Length: 344
Image (cartoon, rainbow, N blue to C red; front, side):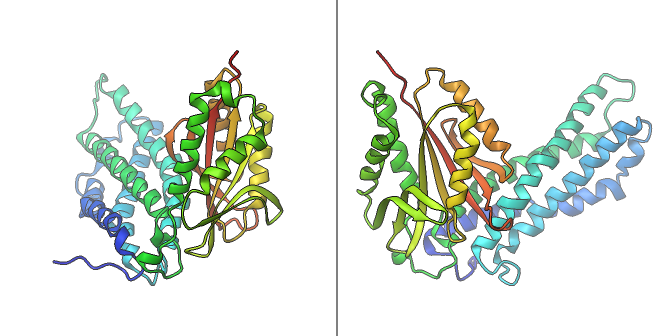
């Protein structure tokens, strides 16, 4: 049977769409099977002999597992329901801004706690009921599969179909990751030859990146461009889709105290139309790992940060942020670090 696609899924993105549907099929009947653990196998009776603390933990395991089956079996297929999700963007945003942050902050932690308690019971006189073992094994599998779904959502987030304007494949906007990969390759040249670049200042390093970006066909690169509350270092405009695709701010690393102000400065440039931003740090410190750990901690704790959604490596991490003008609007912030220590 031929798979039907919603009208705003472009041909180039149908592979992602099909993969999402395939993962939904893995959850088929999982919700009813999970309910049977409570109504038929009566898992609550099997844990009645434990302390109230352990009972609460295992009941939370049941509730979170039930939630995961709901997401996999019933919510994923709704990508085709335009009455609920009129655009691909609305569907992806729901998952990246609400569903996955909840899974990572709540569901995963409660499941991990249940695993810990079950391990402690293995050597006790009561042992671990088969119902609990089954729930743990299934919940772990659900987390793995939904983790792969998240990766697909991130890919869809950077796809042509994500943007609500109706375009043909030939008119599809330039992918943001093409721009980011260009920035990263230029920065890698810095890190491979630090003795040549460490003596340069922020404006000189930024200029090298800006000039390199101009080699990408179909975009207009502007330095010191006015965007909302100030002048952003680099603004990239895609002439094909008539959109600003990326705004970029560059900073020389000066310490932990400069991270939050840099993030806030970039937040101040974000308009309602901006969906992607990039914050670049040129790090001249020799202790690079400490810088990376410090920055990741500060950024993750920022009040507007929803979650970390991807990381090519520890030098390039993508975060989901809430815009300052509207708590229900979001954008992706890529934070990239280039290590150019002073070498004598």
